[in-house]
View 1 (cartoon, rainbow, N blue to C red):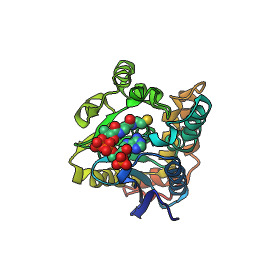
View 2 (view 1 turned 90 degrees about the horizontal axis):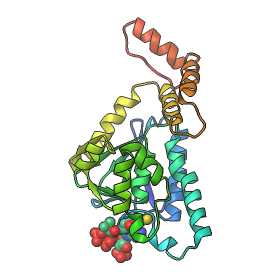
View 3 (view 1 turned 45 degrees about the vertical axis):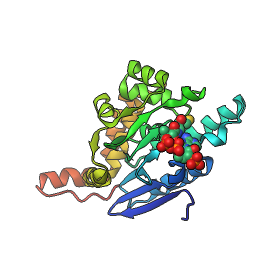
View 4 (view 1 turned 180 degrees about the vertical axis):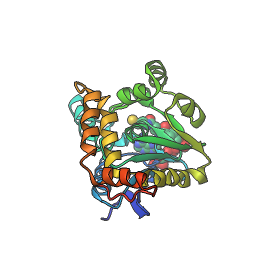
Length: 260
Ligand code: COA
């Protein structure tokens, strides 16, 4: 598939999606969000893709936010539609993917950029990364899930302060807040993400997908996460991967999972 705003690459079970609008600091315009939706969907349905990594092109930014030039003239009706559509196509979509998705934050992750990183299953950042939700400095609030996912990840008080001040935190602060899992030198960012991805890829992808569903259930309204866990746990027993994993353990060999 040919894209104008993103680049996708596949290597050894990992699909890497690079947002490629460096002259606009990879800001998310409508077209980019659409292409990201397609690329995530394609990677998620590709049996050979065990892990997805998303990053930004250039040395400066992961994503510097939603593209401000596209919504500066919107009214309330259009604003609501923008947020709803974006959440459906990209942010909720990514969070609920069955394929593990890692954000490799290689610079500014602001507004929609941090919201995209937070929708991923976890985050790794380079030591030049800067993160924040500066929307109130523009007279608006985060609309791509930021008011919900930031408190989930760093706690209500810290999220309140970061959003109210429209401030930015550096990678070490983000690490201490638990917003990201690792900090590394810029040149080591993708290699580290790939190393983590290959560890993930050795395990049963069908079990990982069930784990994502159960973990996410804790954050869904009206859903009992423990019940989802029981159900997903039970479903695993009917999979080929469960038979293979337990048999391999008992036979003292490495499991060879088929992902079914
Ligand atoms: N939307 C649209 N364009 C953006 C953008 C965004 N969110 N963020 C950066 N850009 C564009 C700039 O307009 C500029 O384009 P131009 O060269 O055609 O004028 C280009 O990207 C480079 O950005 P610039 O501001 O010149 O870089 P900088 O190094 O001086 O500053 C930032 C970097 C990230 C601090 C600054 O770009 C910024 O504050 N961006 C907006 C962040 C934001 O508020 N995001 C939330 C949006 S809801």
